[in-house]
Length: 277
Image 1 (cartoon, rainbow, N blue to C red):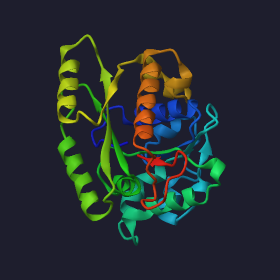
Image 2 (cartoon, rainbow, N blue to C red):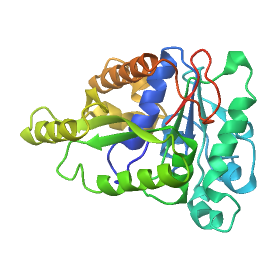
Image 3 (cartoon, rainbow, N blue to C red):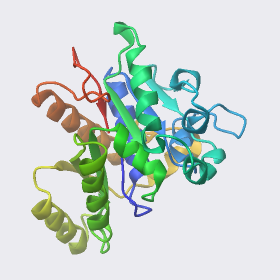
Image 4 (spheres, rainbow, N blue to C red):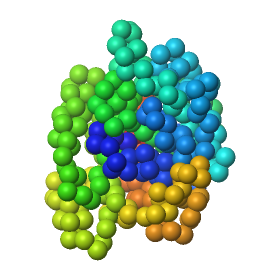
């Protein structure tokens, strides 16, 4: 989940799509790569400074298995939390060997060590709103990029730079990376602007753009303050229903592709396989 522009609903989309997929019975892991730890908060995951976190995985080589926590609300949803320590990781990664591939290797080891009955269907990485080394690690680890775009005037501002960075990663570090999914968020049906932005995004990114749009919703904003996603906080709200529909569309696309992609680029998929986004 990536967009270097802040306030577009990136973390909100990550946790609610993850919750919707998990509610359908799929096994989902959310990796919180944003030092703010908002995804961890929304999933009710403890992430104070002393908690083992993604920082320990990236900097100290800890195993993902040792930092992953179970989401209390949904039994098939897990989260690798972010702590404030992650804020310094951008600098600490600079002198490290293979700094761009540390997350990829950790995910590959984790997936390779899971028994068949615990295999993950989706790995969702919530990126920080920047294009630094943390986001580069996510791009090297993932096969697909999911971009939430808000239906506002500056929606496409900066997107060209994001696409250039993705192309650089494709050329030098991860040839499998591609933009697979775009979701329109904060849609306001009362305004002409939202419709115009939606039309412009669909014109530019037709095949990648989900049919579903996520409306502006007070319930979506309220849910994290209760340590929940809107899926569990208010399942019948317009926001929850939209994310359920978006997750269903995402899963249908994955099924239609024949097999889900694996986080380890050459790992054969069997059953549902893993998709890393």
